[in-house]
Amino acid sequence: MQGNAGLQERLILRADQVSVPHLDKSYLEYAGEKAASVRRLHRTSVAITHAGGSSKPREPFPVIAGIVAARSSWADGLGYAFRSNLPAGEDERLDCGCAPEDGAFDDFSGELEVVGADGTLIYFLFRLLGRGCQIICVSGAVGSILERKGFHYDQDDDQVRDFQA
Image 1 (tube, rainbow, N blue to C red):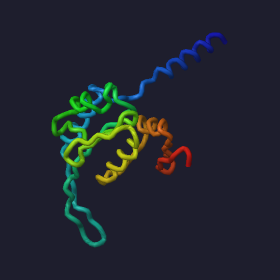
Image 2: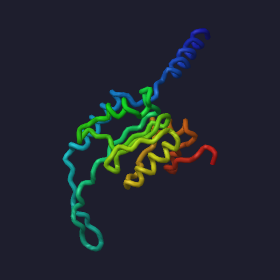
Image 3: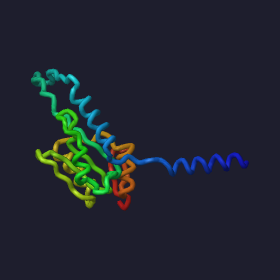
Image 4: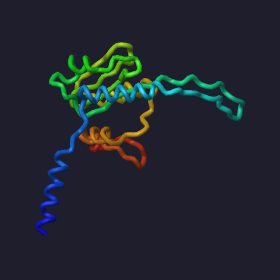
């Protein structure tokens, strides 16, 4: 019995040591590399056949790349250090991001816009939706961030709900 108690203590301690993603130089570089790998893919489109005939192939839409983390690791949040570490290459560019404890950013208007922590999640979601983006899956780090901010993602009906509702 003593052995099991020791195992449980180790498991509890290990669970307390789980790290939550945060924005730092290496995470931004990683996200930039992922964005570039997707943007460099050869993308095609085909004609769409429907009851009324067929439509011309659509031009591939621009890839919007973003990053989500719980917080920034820099003392000034999404300030100078963050801005100077954003990937600069066209393919590596991050169009948007959210770190609810520090703020959100996007360059949808052609210039980098950064907002503080108040209303960050709503700002981020509405800016994405305003670009015509569909939120396909809310899970992993995003789900845990939403839950810490008082929201819950219900996978059964694909809805984000306020815990108070």
